[in-house]
Structure formats: structure tokens, C-alpha cells
Length: 534
Image 1: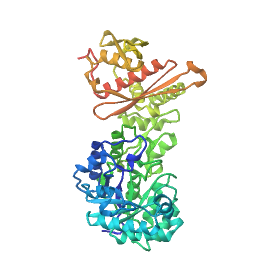
Image 2: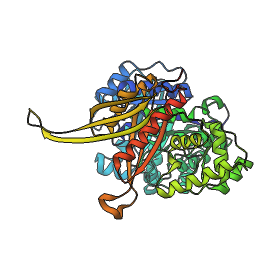
Image 3: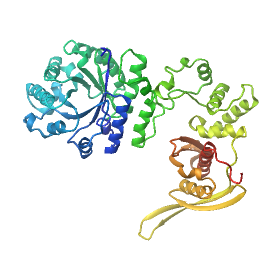
């Protein structure tokens, strides 16, 4: 294997689970572990056996990984116990995983204050625990907790700790920037100094992101000789998170001469892997996330778009498809004709630059954005606006009127409840239909009333669901008479997600406009035939 080979260690299932608001189920852990294995990650840390019932259940019946090595995490034996009589260490070594990662203290301050034992005893605990684990596991990693703080305070003692782990049989000595306070130039210097004592092919790096330097620190460590990187998907982790493997992997593969176990074909699924975690957590992907975010290759300014059209390298540091992403041309009141033409091409609309319809649409978009519309965040509404201007979207239904009432009352059980009722009258295929529905709020009631009228004519709408609803006050100085902008994100069973908007001084009216666009966009893309037509 080349000395340029860098091994990737994913700790999402443990470090990521320490994120505030994150709680993985066993099925989440299994699905993510299998996805990481398919992607080509070298090590997958499954959790801490003995720490909680979820991790116990996961290791009791772990997934059968084909390429990655499954790792169980734990700590060195406790003071006053032998390695054979430490329940925590025993749980880790009995877990159904071929490798173990044990954390131990390497900062003399922590040994003195947190453990309260002689420093020599801590070194003995490290050596005995690693040797004990090495006799029972195929591979053992030693996580040197607070290593960089320890090295700065007392390099001799920090060195003695990691040398003891190496001598006891640890395959990897992982240097942890546990509080995330070290800067890249310090990491590179310290790892370089340590590499004079322990080969870089046995050194790893584990960085937290408290100074927004976890990715940079990890790359600095590799430059200095370390050959394992620990991190998490999307930078998940305690406090400010951990080193983001979704950023580190393409940076290593596409911008350096270091080698990883990730193939070019796998790298093209990077965006999908990132989004898988968001889906398991029921979170919206971060639009501005490097490499994989929706805005990572988005171009809004007219001059930028013109340049990208000629040569993408002017404003794109890589080809988006390499990481499974795509170029995104945004239309807004800052956009010029080039933006619109590029966006039209993405939509499959071919227009000549001198076509009067282009200028008309540019003016219409800018006028509507002045009123409060924002098409750079609502592609579906923009597409409908453009296609309607070109006569490409049929009228699937039209609104005659709607009425919404809220009823706040005490029910028979003495609970205070608020219920919304919507009455909608729409024309569908020449028929006037009036439907009534109650819902959890006026928008839900409107949605249900509309579906009641439309579903018999358009069964394609059965799988449509609203996944996000946002309201922005555009004229706060007007108080309760303010103009509002409503943004609705929708999804269906195909995995498509689209966003529509509505603007009005009446929040219910704005909501209806966004909701109506959402329904129309789905019907158009599903190839629905307007009701009443053969």
C-alpha cells in the first residue's frame, strides 16, 4: 500500500449521537453503517457497548459489513480495577465487533484533576488496557484524549502515554483535539514532532469543530504524516460538531495526491450519503453545505452566470457531478438574461436570447420580487410562472372562492381546543365543486378541502405531502397589516421535493397561492390530463 494511503474512520454512530437533538434508533444505526460500508469507509464505529440499550442492541446483532471494519468504542480500565474485572472494558471486548477503540487521558492536568491518580498509574492503565484488548480483538485503536492540550502543557508526559499504547499493540494512535481549540499550524507542527517517535502510518487525527477548523486541522495532520482521519457525516457531533467527512473526502480525493478507499464511482454518491443522514434525522439538508449543498454550485449574479456558461471553472472549483451534485442557476431580481436562459435550459425550455418572451419574463420576475416573491428559493413557482407564460401548463383547476373559520372552544373533556374549518369552491373540468374539511390549522384545512375536491379527478395527488411551511413578514412596520410571504416545501413518493411561494397581505391567501402552485407543479410533472379532457 502506498504511504499516501489515508484511512477513513467514521464515528457518526457514536460522536454524532452526542449531538443535541439527535437520537439514533437501532435501525438508523444499521442503515447508516451499511451505507458507509457500501461507500467505502474503512472503519465504522458503531457506538459504546454497555453505555445504553440502543448500542447494546446494535452490537448484539450487528450488520454484516463487507468492506468496513466495525469498531466498538470504550475506555481504558478504571483506576483501582484490573483489566479482567472492569465491567466497562469487558462490555467493549465482548461486543460483536472485530476492532475496539479505547480512549485514555494524555493531558497531565486531567490525570491530576479528573482521575486524581499518580501520572504513572495512568500510563499503566493505558498499556494494560491496550494489551488486554489486543489479545481479544483483531485490531485496537487508542484515542489519546486532549492530546494537543497535553502536548502543549507537558510534551514528555503526553509522549509517554501514546508510546505506552503503541508498545502495547495499538494499531492506531489517534490524536484527539477534544475541545476543538487547536489551530491548523499547531496541529501540523505537533503531529510532525510526534511522527519522529511514532510512524505516521500509525497516527490518526480526531478533531472537534469548536473553532471551525476541524476539517483544516485534519488535513494539516495528514500533511504532517498522520494516515487515519476520524470524523462524522455532515460534521455531526457534540457542541460545534466533529470533522466533516463529507467535506474531507472530496478534498482528499480531488485536491491532493493522497489516496483513500473511496472510488470515483462511490464519490458520485457523496451527496446521496449526506442526504441519507438528514433523512434519518428528519432534518432538511443544509443548502450552503460545501460540495453537497443545493447552493454549493448555485449562481445568482448575471455576470457569474455568463462566465460559468463559458467556462464553469471560473466560479466552480470542481465539476458538481463528481460528488453527485449539480449546477444550479438561480433566478431573482439580481439576475440577467443569461440566468434565465440557463435556467430555461435546465427546465428543457429552448428560447433564443433575442426572443421577446425572455425580456418579458425577466421584467415580470423582477416586478414580482419587488412585491415580495423570491424565486431563488422557490424553483417550482418559477417554473410554473415561466411555463404558464409560454402556454405550457394547462389549467387543472381554478378557485372560485374559499372561506376559513377557526373555532376555539372547550370540548366535552374540558380541554381547550382550536379547530379550523375550510370551505373551498373550485372549478374542475367544467364542474363547480364545493368541499368542506376541518384540520389542524387553516392551511391544513385548506389542503384537505382542496384534496377532497381534486383527488377523485387527479389520483396522482394521493402521495403528495407538505414537509415544511415558512412565513416571513415582509413589511414589519405595518404591524398586523403586514405583507407576508409563505413558502411551502412539498414531497411525494418518488423522492422529489419542490418549493412554492405565495405573497399577500392576508396570510391565508398567501398560503393558498403557495399550496395551489404545489398541486399544479406535481400534476404537470406527473403528466396529468386536465379533468374533462379525453
